[in-house]
Image (cartoon, rainbow over all chains, first blue to last red; front, side):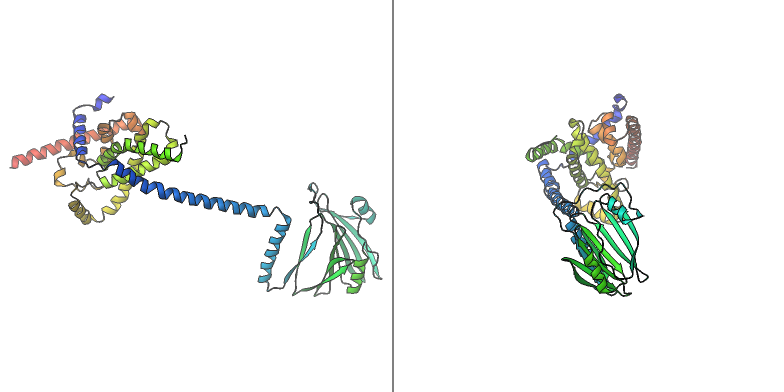
Length: 246
Length: 184
């Protein structure tokens, strides 16, 4: 196949090309190599190094931020900051109240096998199902009667018990959830609509929230339970009920 | 293959020195612009060194750089032709002041008087490219096919056409020379 092109024309072309090439001033190779090094080697490598450092730093920062969410206390702190930001938007009237369960052990592993579902039960049944001692009020104002008890298994180990009462034809509730160690709960309220006072409930810090429509919410934590009393009831009576809960 | 930094630079320099003349001369014959050829060759070496690990047969380094540099040069030519064609007066001034034969992307349109005798300058870049690789660089059909990333059949076809165009232009050139001779 090569013979086809190695004829007279081929020789003529080769001759012309060699003649033309002989007239070209070829730049010195050393000079061109130095130019090459100047152009590509030094600056480009430096840029790459900077970008690698920047990338590494960015990756470390991202990992640190992502890692911080693994710790409940840090996540809670971030939540606080978020709430502070919201407060600014709402003109400083939004507040967050924390309910902290102190404990040294880590939260137990939770298996989410069952979906939370509320079921009506009797108090006796509740006490058979849950592994903790159910909190009950030993004082109730006159005219209060217990209507219903509901049990919700929120996760494998945590339960929510709602005891509904009627007080002067008004609903009145006692809610309780068992807390896991390290639990850090909170609730938000707007100071334009509600007012919050700290109340001592047998040595535990409670928060009494009074809404504009006269509903009182008293919330505190004791012996691993988060308890909430809700109802349109006299403040003194509510506190008395709270202090009678064991 | 990994080398210490100093050793790598030394190897790069050796390869550069071994291939530079071969690549530069061929490229300059194809595009006929030494400055553009210089830039394209430098860029070709840079890309080749950066992707050295992709080279399967290391004894074909020069052909590989050639391939990259040719593509680079063609891209540069395309860019330049858009710019140069807008100011032909400026181009002629540059040609006159440089003292070098016009090595420009529009060489098919702008031919200087003393270049008429060289038929190769009348061919387009594609024809010069295939002829230079075949008759100046002495690459085989297979090697040209690899450099230009085309099939061997395509190489042969392009070679035949380029040679035919060269033959026709050469004949025409000779006829016009003899006519000029008769006129005198």
